[in-house]
Length: 247
Image 1 (tube, rainbow, N blue to C red):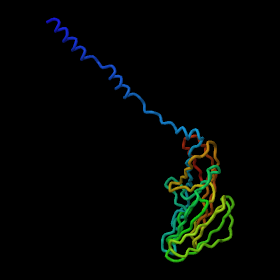
Image 2 (image 1 turned 120 degrees about the horizontal axis):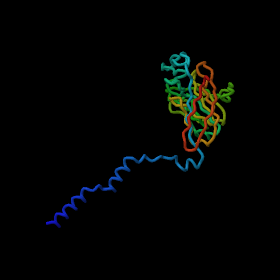
Image 3 (image 1 turned 90 degrees about the vertical axis):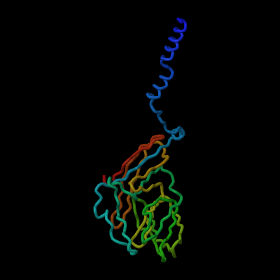
Image 4 (image 1 turned 180 degrees about the horizontal axis):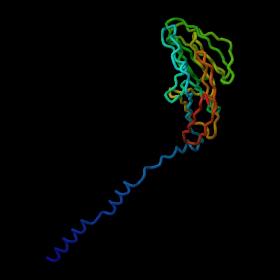
C-alpha cells in the first residue's frame, strides 16, 4: 500500500508541474516585435529613390476656378485651374533635370470641342479626333517654360472621327495644340504632369539633391506661372517636396 501511494503521489505532482518550454513559446509570441521591413537591397545598391512633388497655389482667384462658359458643342468649358481643397494644382508640369526621358508617345484627343488631356509630356505625339465632322487644329512650338515664344503655326487636319496624326517633337521644347480657343500643352522633355491631387511622383531618381521646376501653362488669358524648388532623394525611400506657385 505504501509503495502504491508513493507512485500515485509522484504521478500527481508530475502532472501539476508547469511546462517550461510551452510557457516560453507562449511568452515569446506575445512579446516579440514585428519584423522591420528594410528597403529592397537591389534598390539601395542601385542608389535610386522616389520623390513625390506637390504643386500648390493658395487662394487661387475665384475667376480662375469657375467655368468660363460653354464650348461651341454646348459643353461646359473646364476652369483655368481646378485646385483641390488643400490647394493642390492638377495639370501642372514638374520638371527634374536628371529624371530620365519622357514616355515615348502620348495621345491628345479632340472630343466635344475640347482637348484631353490638357497637359502631357512625350517624345512624340498622336493627335486624334472623336468629332463627327472634320476638324482643323494648330500646333505651335512655344520655346521653353522659361521663355515662351509665338512659333509658326503648323496646321493639323483631322478629316473624321477616328482619324489620327502622328507628330514628332523636338526634345526640350514646349508645344501648344489649339482647337479653336481650346488648347493643350506638351513638354518634350524630362517632365511629369500633376494628377488630380496636384502631385507628380518621380520613380528611380539618382540619390542626391535635385533642382525642380514647376510650370503651370497659360490658359484662357491667365499668364503662366513658374516656380522652383529642390528635393533630396535617398536610396530606397520616398522623398516629399512642395512647390508653391506663389511663394
